[in-house]
Structure formats: C-alpha cells, structure tokens
Figure 1 (cartoon, rainbow, N blue to C red):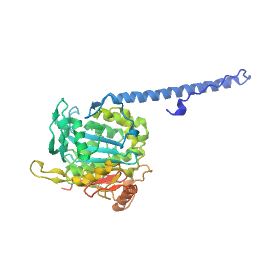
Figure 2: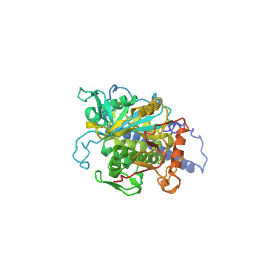
Figure 3: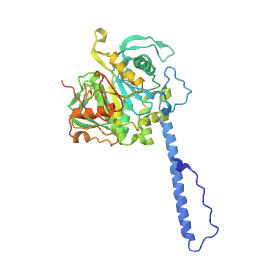
Figure 4: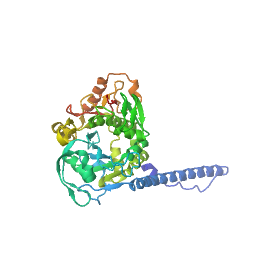
Length: 431
C-alpha cells in the first residue's frame, strides 16, 4: 500500500444551502464517489489480507532446520542491512521420501546439487557457485540431528554430507571449504523443482545437439525447448546425456537452464511483483527444508528482491574447479583444484565481482553462435538466440567486457561459467 493510499482524507464540509435543480446531480455524484471509495477500501483491505494469507500459507508448509549457532528466537534480519551481503546455500536432495512413485524406490538422502549464492553488499552483483557432487572434500565434525555428532572425515565426496548430518553438515562443510559464513540454507526435493518451474511458466532452453538419456528419460532434439514440470527436473538431473557424461558436464548444462531462468524471471517482472514472488515461495515451500534465519517467507522474498536491480551481466554462474581422477576408493571422483578455487573465494570474501574467461562455459555447454548477450535494461526474448547472427566469440567477449568494466576478478581458466546475459546451449553427449 502506498503512502498516498493510506493517508486519511478530511471530508469537505457539507454546504449549508443547495440550489434547486442541482441536488439530484450532486447526490448522484456523491453516491458514485462513495461507492468508488468503498470499492477501493475493500480492494486495499483485501490486498493486505491476501498478502497476510499468502505469508501464512507459505510459512505453514516450511520445515525448519536449525544450523549450528542459530538462535531460534531472533527475528529475521533486514536483508539490506546484512554485512557482506547474502550467502545462501541451496541443496538439491535426491531423496525420494514423500515424493510419490515417479522417482523409484530409492531411500538415499544425498545432496545431488549443492550451490552457493552470494549477493554483494551493495546488491550490484551476484554469483552462484556449483560444487560437483563427487568433489572430494574435508568434512568437519557435524551434529547428527539426534543430539550427537558425526566424526570429522578428511576426504569424502561432498554429497554424503546430507546423509551424515543433514543440511547443517552440508553448510559446515561448505563454510570450511570456502571460508565464508553461510547464515541461510535450504534443501529442496524433486517435487519442489517441478513446482517452481511450473510457477514461472517454463524455461526456454537451447540444445545444441540431441540429448538422449534413458537414465532420466530425457530425449531432446537440437533446438529450443520450453521446459517445465517433470521435463525441467529431468533435464537438470541428466548427466549421461550431456557433455562428457560426467557431473562436471552436467553443471555447465544446468547453468544453461539457470541463466535462462533468471532472464525469464526478470523479463516477466516477477521480482517486482509481490504476488508472483509469494507464488514462487509457495511452490517451493512444501518440498523444502530451510534454516531458521530463512524460515520467514518475508526473508525469502527480500532476498529475491535484492536481485531485482542487478544487471544480467553481473549475475554469474560458476563451477568449483576440479578434475576427474583419483585412485582406489576415490577413483572417478572430482579432485579439487584448491589453489584456483581460493582465487575465486578470496574475491567473493572481499565482496568483489567475478567473471569467467570469455567462452569458457564448460563441458556441457557452448555459447550460442546466433545470440548476442542480453542488454541489462532490455526485456528478455527467448527467441533472440535464433535471430541475431553474430560470432560466438564476439558474444562472449561482450559479456566479459560488461562484467570486467566494474573491476571484476577474471577467474583462472579451470573455473568455467557464464553470466545470465550470455545465451548458451547445452551440448548433448557424443557417444
């Protein structure tokens, strides 16, 4: 409600005398405005009620998990006042529990996806870092959820942290790995991804070469596909069908989807429409566990609003660097490139924007050769990728220039990624 709409108006004094012949008109006009005023009043009150109901409706579905050091009696912080910006860990669980029969009978609870969102303190840039599920990391001692603790481990795949100690253990592990404090965290399950993709009306995804993956039943021809519901979920899950068939290839393919998702949300004015924002929150809430400080729907919405004015070229998606290798029990696991990763997280800890080398999109993606990067003040056009004819390296150079212009740290070549302004296509696995 605006200040003008909430301000009381002092009614004009009724005239002491009314001229003949004007009384009926004056009465009709007054009655009309009283009716309009009543309708407006009802509309305004209804708007407040709808917002209150939406907040309650979202909040009642949330499962709240206390992270290590959380104080459950502390009010949600004002997002604009958080020192150092926002650090939020989003974990995608592969648990089938309570998700219906569509995903099989498995009962494991591993973090299939682990992504860290950092929003700068002045809300001028945002970075999302994906951690390969098989990345070998050091896991600290974690609460086990039953009043005890799980032992620290020097070298384990990061995706077992959810199994050993739930969301708090994944957060503690990523905090140790990155040197960042992470006050916000959420764990989302399969159905939550489906509902969120439906809530935005689907996401246009460019496929450079056919994807055929029987594991996830993902079969897509080359071209642009509008993905929603189960199709969107299975596209995000497919590993055998993209890149080199590894999780490293899958991450870059997921970034094709995520960058298009950001463009879709921004072009539909979702971030400026409270109703749409609460709709997204509602879509995820019933399939999500959140940390204490994220348990207020208002906090969820305020974090989303923090992204509203960030230009697309200042929103980047990156992969934690590493190579597939190892021996023995670690054979085929992702060995971390700690030195290059530290260059990235040092910049993030210093609240500096980062950017990947031009065109360095990873194993499962490539720059769309027919698309220019989207101007930050222009509406997104899902068809633009097929109508603008430019060279792919020129498109990538423009994207990098847009970010580097604000003293961005150019990341080592081992760190792949892209900005939300950069149109890219998923590469199918070449058998």
